[in-house]
Image 1 (cartoon, rainbow over the protein chains, first blue to last red):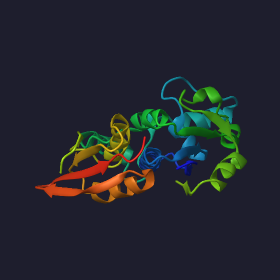
Image 2 (tube, rainbow over the protein chains, first blue to last red; image 1 turned 30 degrees about the horizontal axis):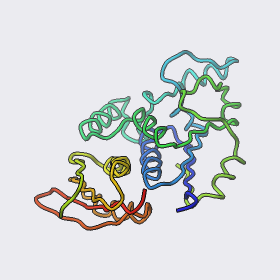
Image 3 (cartoon, rainbow over the protein chains, first blue to last red; image 1 turned 90 degrees about the vertical axis):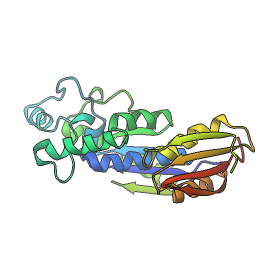
Image 4 (spheres, helix red, strand yellow; image 1 turned 30 degrees about the vertical axis):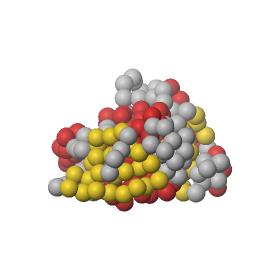
Length: 160
Length: 77
């Protein structure tokens, strides 16, 4: 195994369930000796936003957008059966009972395994998301060409 | 089957048994055998696949009363 195989994932969704699936695959791939990049774009940026701190964007529309779309691992909702948060609360409870990691635990694990977390600059620009809105685990910001550059060299590329 | 070290993954679901195996195998010497005990059936397919990807040797599965034991021989550092 001279050169490592690569996995590139676009995390487009900010749904809790989809983010979990992305992290399960990322950490498993890293365990299998693969080099993993996760590229967070659009609603996916919510997964890597800080949980704490205020809204940092400028301009009324962007402030409104980011107020309604706060993001942060603890604010993610299920894509189905959210039921005003009750469904998400129940799912988190069930996951805890089953000893499955939370998004925060997955992010820590992924980083320890060398998974790269990259935020999309276009979404940041449009939505007015600044780099300091992200958690410290985020490695860098980049555009579509960077992702495609990685994806071209990857054995597996996924869009979640 | 005899093993040099054992890893308890009972009560853990995918991806944890595989993540923990990848972590644990680092502590073994080349040629030593790791036993992983789990109760998530996925491991029966996952461990051979992990071995194939990482180049370690899959030795087999033993099952008794819902408890699954899989054996991996460390093939390289």
